[in-house]
Length: 101
Image (cartoon, rainbow, N blue to C red; front, side):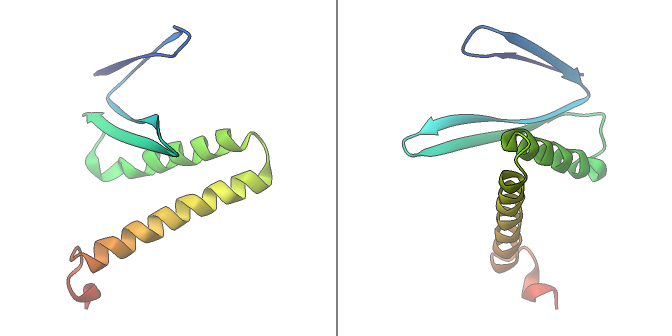
């Protein structure tokens, strides 16, 4: 069991509990926003973790869009671009030898 207590800048406390927790903490770092993510706990099998994590990422994109379909499309495009970059980096840095051939 994992328990996470989140206290916002106004002192509001949110308590989340579950078998496994995924999330991120964002901090303003100059002109950019730094994001540190985490995955802790057990009980949810490793081979099924990524589906729910991606569902959470998409829900975050939807929340940020606040109902604006153009912002939602832009957010999903940014997610896709990040995933494409991660795959390219994985392949070119030796994650898949010889491009899988």
